Image (cartoon, one colour):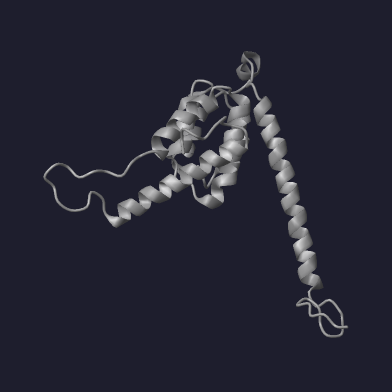
Length: 193
């Protein structure tokens, strides 16, 4: 008897063998990605930060730190991979709060989110005070309500463009909070959500 299978031709040969191989590669790569995330989470949950001796070996000159902080604030999404390579070279212990604020204030596209989470992971592993500094900023910026009209003023409080920009920003920050939660960097996302 002949049973209809959309991936087989009438002669019984697999017409979708290439599709099956592609699907198997996708499944294998997604399995590896999940394993990498689990490993990253375990490392982040066990992270305690570097000691004073290790931080003293890093460069703490303003000549190197100032451009790094500027890149965090202005071009975080675009240069996340490059910034990740710079973190192990710099002593940012005095600037952890500025880095956390820069991460939250940056305009991050959803495609750039994994690189930003990796940057946050490196910061969390190097500086134990990074996650406690990051969470209040996430809460503040993610819970920004819509502006209200002033008393006696008619019309909408914000334009459609402002509303769209605010909601896109909020969505990006909520996604960042959830990715940081799954990566083990922040303990709970309930205050943010």
